[in-house]
Amino acid sequence: MDKAFFEKYPSYQAYSKNFLGAWSFEDGDEVVTISDIKEVDMYDKENAVTKKEVCLFFKEKELPMVLSAKKNYEAIAYVLGTNKWANWINRQIILGARMDRGFAGKNQLCLRVIPEKPKSISKEPATPEQLAKIRELIENGTITNETAMLKYFRIKSVEELSKGEAADLIRKRTGEAAE
Image (tube, rainbow, N blue to C red; front, side):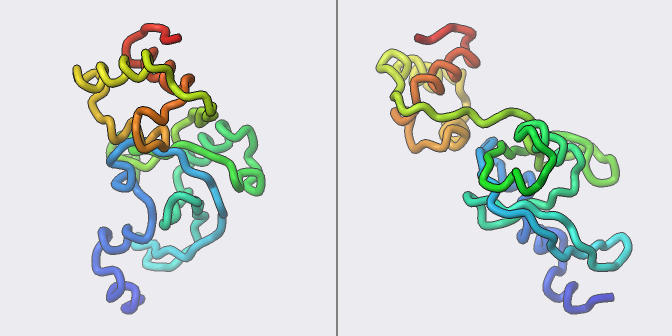
């Protein structure tokens, strides 16, 4: 038994603060850029040994993500079009919390790579009509979490939405095409 480990991490919550988890994405999905991939020593409490796990590091996050779920690996390979880890560096993926089969096959909130390509951001700003429609959707509750929506698009206000992003958001929330 590694007493130093138990002194440093008396509980799972204390230990998990060193890695991203579902709790890291309570405000919604987020686009992140993979900055590095490397092995990190982790304690396996089931076997009471330290083992190496592959972790992803991101430009936008201080903490790494343990790449232990096969679903996450497969989602990244699908989104980026390659299973070669070296080709993942400086590429973007979307992370978020989802209900799924997690540890020991239990249904729980898990950190997942969302199998969608992050939208490319066009520089052309949203039209005044689009902005008015989005404000209406926010006010009437159709878009219930403005903070998560802004975080997803990595902007500070709806005024920073590009024309394409605004059109996509309106179409998803209303079914209407927005020019």
